[in-house]
Amino acid sequence: MQEGCLLARVVDSRADRPVHKQIADRLRSAIKSGVFGPGELLPSEHELAAKYGVARGTARQAIVLLRNEGLIDAVQGLGSFVREPEPVQRLRPGGLSHGLETGRDPHDPPPDGDRHGPVGGRLGAPPEELMMSFATTQLEKASAPADVAALLGLPAGADVLVRSWEASYKDNVRTIASAYTRSDIATAAGLIDVESGPAAYLALIASGHRITRIIEEVSARMPTTTEAQRLDLAPGVPVLSIQRVNHTADRRPIEVTVSVMSAERYRMLYELGDD
Image (cartoon, rainbow, N blue to C red; front, top):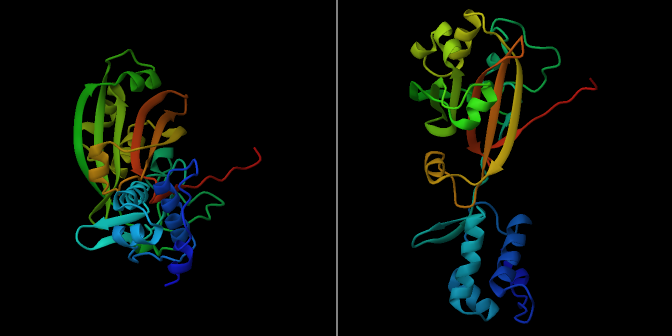
């Protein structure tokens, strides 16, 4: 291990930047440059304190800072380890359920120029690794939240069908999602009897409500406590929140879907043409 010379540099107690942040900077740099590889044990608080001539509490602050950034995992009684990188999955706009949200029949051939492989696939992953399972957590009529009602062009408190679900990969929850469908559309499509997942969009198509236009807004934020627990997120890892408004051919918004997933595990992939 080469950390000796890198970490032996003294910290400047007279600098404007706090000493614990200077220590964290050097540990972070060592992790980024590969001096400490994934799964490797970092120097202990005692070792860092001795190396830099600081109090153990100062060394602890540096470790806590890196843990909160999601760079390391602290294991009780064993020490702090560099986090193993998460397998990254890519998502294309308009394709979170294999193209069904856009109203394309699953039996249709894929669109021209669809060169990116299966939706949601880990980069370089074979197709057999891409299967996700869905578990419905809520399926009932309820009052639309104010922001959702506004997006659907409905009065505040209007009834919508709420379909909430979790998408899992190998028993690990990867996405938490909720769809709010206009009550009249949901009734016509019989969605109250349809479990979440691609089947819901097939029901919309069968009832004549083919989704042809999608507007998505992607934002990053820190997770709620429940989200962090369900998605098994390390401290400091943000989530991506994807708000999607589905429209039919007459440009009428009929459904709002909000999906939340780990920003560490997913990337949004956009391809823009000249039109």
